[in-house]
Length: 128
Image (cartoon, rainbow, N blue to C red; front, side, top):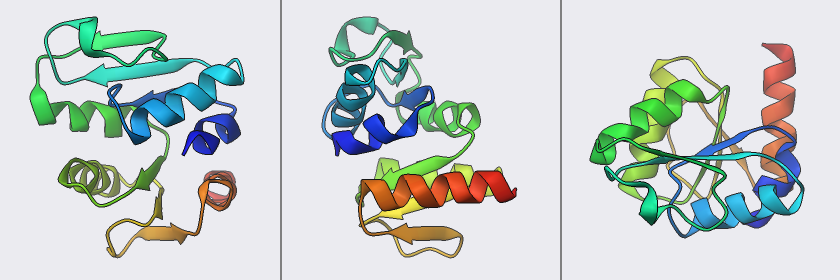
């Protein structure tokens, strides 16, 4: 999933931990982009190695509100409950959401892969 980070050409805001968040951060860093990690813990030490700006919130899953608010748009990957909450917050805030193998919810624009997701996201942002 590091192609998501590579393709963005913008500041990447994520949950700052492992898995998809780490892969996107790695890709963004490889392209010289800035990565921000909104961490659930109250200390910065848990951020993945590719987060440039770790923000320790101490909010647990409540940090998903901050992630959705900070983003201009959301690319949702996978079907974990944290992803679902980020999707819900983003949609309530009327932010564009593009999804790869994620929840089937009205308002999510489906994408087949990272490149497709980024293209759809930018198309959506440019017509908003």
